[in-house]
Length: 249
Ligand SMILES: NC(=O)c1ccc[n+]([C@@H]2O[C@H](COP(=O)([O-])OP(=O)(O)OC[C@H]3O[C@@H](n4cnc5c(N)ncnc54)[C@H](OP(=O)(O)O)[C@@H]3O)[C@@H](O)[C@H]2O)c1
Image (cartoon, rainbow, N blue to C red; front, side):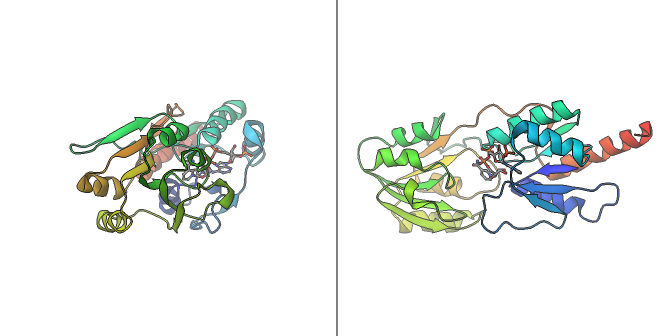
């Protein structure tokens, strides 16, 4: 089994599969994070070389089942996974956390892209808390009038930063009280984030502080059989393995 990871859900599935004898899983990382938290199952790091490369890997190992547990905003690898699974004739399961839904008291401003999020900040200078990861910061150079507090797992490349940027590194999830204290300390006026979903206190903190949130919406999900949690993926994978065994495959 190949699990495409880089998410909390992929790591949770790896923990559930550790020690299981009916499966030989490998967890794959893109290699973006400097010090990934290594799972208790075998892992590999680095790209496959597009959909064709991934299909070759699936055939060569060989892989019997592919789990796409990548981040909801990692669109290229999910498209590659769908294409490679079809090319290699390998069943594919998508493990993807559901999006956040606005709650009463939220002041969300949905936008389709990170570029639109930068534009939505408006002309007047604001103090912005930016939590979209470190790869998509370039569009905010075009909104240089704002003061940014930028949080990411690893420090961003300096060439991507807007002029007034304070960098904070850390790996979530972050609790509501700590997020609220952080936003108060920095005088945050607006939060910009992607609709990643999952456990996170920043949205509740923004609600409590009455702050607007510019929310980058998800693109359509990759399609195919999809579950939202690692436990449900395990159930699906067991059933799949049992069916294979019954067929004598
Ligand atoms: N985008 C986000 O906001 C975000 C947030 C948190 C975590 N992540 C994780 O970070 C990784 C990179 O995200 P991204 O948005 O840069 O992805 P992406 O744009 O969809 O993928 C770019 C390329 O990175 C390689 N790749 C991506 N995930 C891989 C994996 N799990 N194993 C091996 N190769 C992988 C593939 O290279 P080849 O074509 O050479 O195979 C892919 O074509 C993903 O694993 C994702 O789960 C992303």
